[in-house]
Image 1: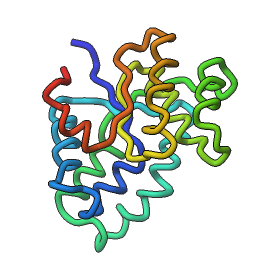
Image 2: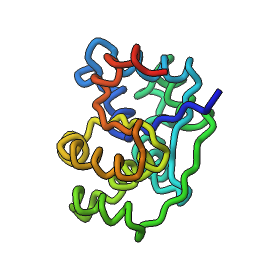
Image 3: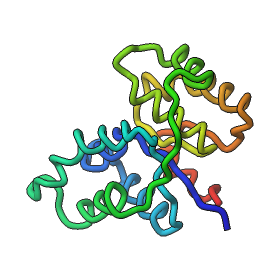
Length: 168
């Protein structure tokens, strides 16, 4: 059996803790099902993604008042316990150059890395970043196709949770 891989943007983990964004507990369902199916979280070898996870989610995890019970356990599983799939990152290669043409905002380098990792791993990227990733989905999928990354998709947490039945 092949290793199941997934890329999950920080925005999804942040929205997980926000009842207004985690409508119908869809992110609970998504993270639980992916964990049960033994998906591995894809990150870059330069640890830029893990650095963003730590800077944005680390303080929340350390503050027990903000994260209770099951949510705390689930975040710890994904961010600390789950074995990571490390993918090499080359900020100057052809793939990154093409991604930069679609996500061109200078301060969005980690978003570009999430996309790069998803394409390199030939897997889905679950993100709630509509402006930079979801809006560029069609162009990003074209870049992935040219790299024979046929399993790549860029989807919101809500779309991903609704589509879980179609995943292997």
